[in-house]
Image (tube, rainbow, N blue to C red; front, side):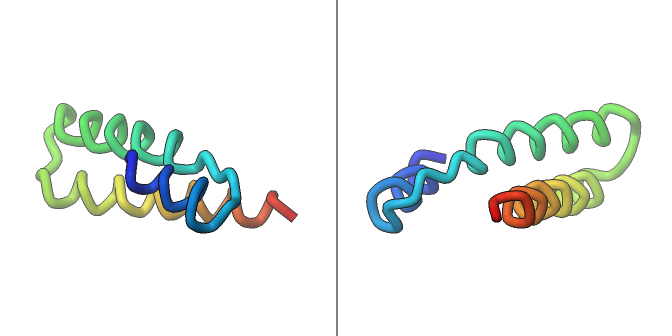
Length: 63
């Protein structure tokens, strides 16, 4: 997460805090799916999709 924040703040010079929200969202999604009995691979795939969806929503509403 620190590398993602470093890239957005220092290199791109654009304050994008999506990293702050997408990692916890992915973690909560994965943990919830694993605890409900789904496979770990499925949970990680869905968590990745949710993180991508969050970034897409952030990109759409940025304009």
